[in-house]
Image (cartoon, rainbow, N blue to C red; front, side, top):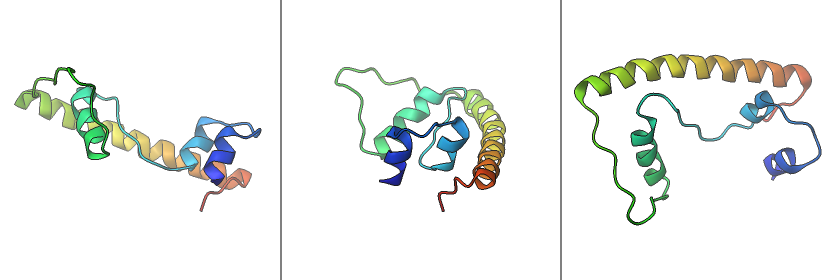
Length: 95
């Protein structure tokens, strides 16, 4: 309920404040569409009828995605920590 008030209320928002709210996240890194489909399926969200599946990635593509996802994870952790520090500094703590 508090998140809804924050998101839809009158208080000004920033990306850092939204990050402080927490919640699920997914990447848009190389081959993200293939992996996003599985992520959505795990949450009970399925594609429209007739939507063609993506081809399975090759071994090289899997390795390339793994390399890029590691970089993305490092950056996301940095951004989340930066947002947490910012929210703590301005008194916008969620926990």
